Structures are given as C-alpha cells and as structure tokens.
Image 1 (tube, rainbow, N blue to C red):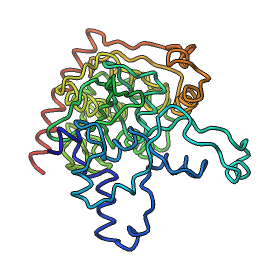
Image 2: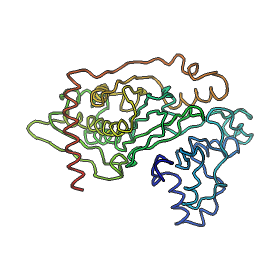
Image 3: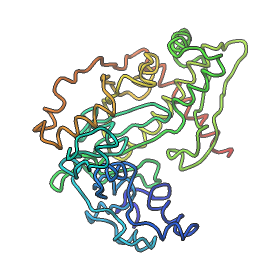
Image 4: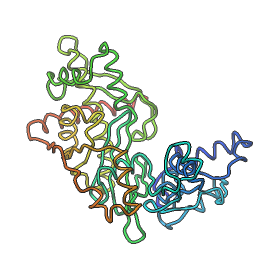
Length: 373
C-alpha cells in the first residue's frame, strides 16, 4: 500500500515523529491542538489562523497521491485524529492577515495579507523558476539536494528519494517534486577548511584546482553526517580511499572532497533517472558550494547535466511567491521577469571522460564499503 499511495516511506517525516511522541510522550501528545510544519506555525503566529497546504501535507507524508486526499489509512495506522490537521489553504493566495499583535511586535502593517508558504526545497526550486516537468533545481549547503519536477506519481521502491506535491500543483496539472538529499555536503567542505588551518574557501578552491580531475585516484566518501537516504538509511561514515603519500598533496584532498560530494549527488541523480525523470539541465543559485568553479565543473561533467547559474535565493523566491499570491504578478512568467542566467556550465568531452572514469571507480569503492558494513 505505502509507496503507490504515499510515494514515500514515512519513517523520518512528521507523521512518524508524531507517532513517536504519541507512544513515548503521551501527555505531550494530548496537548496537541493543530499539526503544523514550521512554516505553518510562523504563518499562524502572524495571522492567528492555523492552516497548511497540500504541499505541506505531502511533506509530512500525510497525503495520498493516488486518492488525491489526506491518507485515511496512514491516520488510522498511526492513530492520528484527522481533526488535528490544519485547514488547507492555497499555496498562492490570501491565507490570512497580519494580526494587530504581530504587527506591533514586528513593525508590520496590521491587515497585511499572507499570500504564500512553502517548504525549503520546494521554495528553493520555485526561486529558480523550476515549475515544469523536466526542470530541476539543486543546492549544496550543509546538505546537498537535487529536486526535479515530474508530472507522474513516481516513487523509488527502496525509498532512497522522496516525492512531494510541488507548489504549482493543481487538480488538472500534476506537479510533484522528487527530492534526493545528501547529508554531508558543505559540512564536509567546512571540515576540510578546519583541518587546513582555516584557509579561506576561495583559496581552497584555487588550491584544489591545481590537482587534476579525478584527483589521481584519491576518493572521498562524504557520508559522515548521519544516515543517508540514498544509501537506504545506512551510515557507512565518511572515509578517504586510495591515499598515496608519494603522490597526493593537500590540493588532491581538497579536490577529492568536492569530487566526492559531486559523485554522491550523481549517485542520487542516477536513482531519480531510474524512476523516469529527465535531468539534462539543473538550475542553481550562485551560493554555497556552487560558488566554486571546480565544483560546478565537476557537477556538470560527473552528472552529464548542464548547469544554469542564477543570482537568486530562497528569500527572493518567497518574495516572488508572495507577489503571485497577492496578485502583484499575474503569472509565474511575470514574477520571474528580469531573473537572468549568469552562466551556463556544460560538460566538455575531455573532462567528462575523466570524471566518468573517476565516478565509476568511486561507485565500485562505495559498494565495497557498503558490503563491509
């Protein structure tokens, strides 16, 4: 039942966390009046009105994609009263007005409408104008994410990726966001900075670029930040393989760190492609790991996907979304008018071959690591 209806295994999402509270802290659970995601809670503090969206319900793994409604089976299985779910409001449109108390506290105008809400990754995708099937967004902060829009209820039988209702989904036009997440991304680069004596990131990038693509056989596995969904919730730990003291320098290690992150993201993208998603081009904000030219080059050549780089972020996406919901913009194209592509990074034949060889070797070594755990 679970996957065709929920498109996810709900083990690490809101519904299951609530079940844990229900079983382990029943007195606390008994105090619940409304179930809300963090964004819903912020909106409630602004307006005094509890509410959520279809996208929010799907992020909590409450949504039955096959039936097009809240999952009765999940609520029954977990013993969650449907009355605890907050009322549903549109993702774009008036969802309430700023109350007098919130206005006085925040210096806002009382009665200002709240007109948009979304989770972090659906909003990051929206900020990049990723709305149609075949379009994909990526980000690489503490964790790394690739989020692709699909018009089919796709799921991975091993639950290595997740699916949510995207912000522009309608009854007539299915828009689901398929998300793969790598926990150990920028946090690995931060760790490398610490062990490099606090070197500035741009200097790290310059030094890493002096080593050749593939890092002459040095491989880094960035799995040191918790159980990884793409590895079926396994925790192999971070590791370095192939280190040769006669060959490898700090430059090799810094480059292998960025390449290891990219290879892990490529591994997740391979899972998404096996589900029928087309990921030939991805959009990214010029931020976090995508500030690194080496990282962008490695990403394009290891994944085979062209990168479109934009000067935008989640805050801009939220502002544009609120503008759509308030009617300031009459359409999505109007909301994104003027958001120009800063650069396009495409795979090149020579680098692509080198990265593909290195990625193939990385995958072989990953399977060896997993088989020994």
